[in-house]
Image (tube, rainbow, N blue to C red; front, top):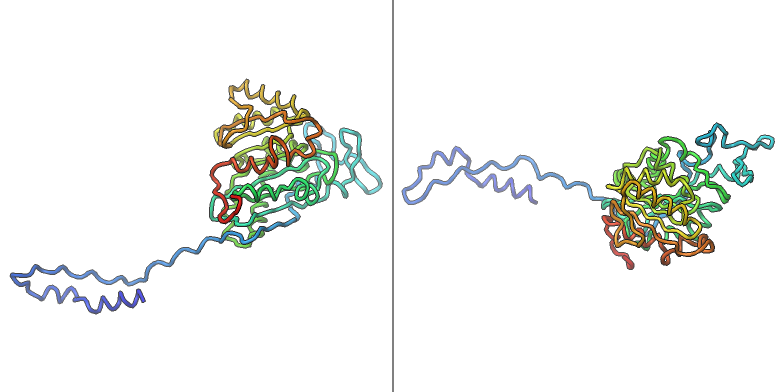
Length: 350
């Protein structure tokens, strides 16, 4: 209708030649020549952004860039990771002297993907990378016992969850391929592709590829976090680190990362008596670099914030620390303190 009206108006208007042939009367000022009607229609509207999810989506999917299997050496040594043999079977000997066989413990390529109800990739998106502790599986521990997807959902934030399976149900913190230089970046690239497929719209790909990444490590997940930050090749994407009773070593790596990235990232370490000494060590390393930190929970986790919360209990609290630390559901609380990711529309608890 709009185009028809424009063409009709053009036919009714006097042409430039007619306007010049008429002599203006003394009582009436000359009328300016009419502008020619546009020859093209109005530009088409840009494609509509992907809609928010009507319901949450969860998937366990095998990654090509998974942490395991891993068939190289342990960093800083010439010792092969798989140093034990039993016929055709290959296994790894842990620091405790236990032998775990590759086909049972170090062969699960799956990662857990989760998009909460209302997730909208057209708005600012953050990816949460959750690194579980020892003796864990994605289904039994990350989903059910620790309720990580639920805590993401209840944070009310526009967050996509990615959680790789590390050593499967074993007392081992080995980082596997996260020990390799640049592997963390490859993992994030694949995660973006997988999340786009889970969402179900290619227009969502750009948001996942550019999304900042917050790393949350629990217990034995510290080793994968430390090496990902030191040599993973994607520190430009990392906007924060949440350690949930996870500082069992590698304090120099964490201190060096935060010293280099504190204008763009935050650090939160909550702990029990089991990691009290390591947290004191990290605080000392930050003090030597003249990097300020607090020992209280801040109102917001903004770039430059470094805070230590604890000790909040003894070793008996460690097993449930993801669901009860300084308060119930501490991961949910920490995520809600990260500014810049508007609450998901329509959430009852947003």
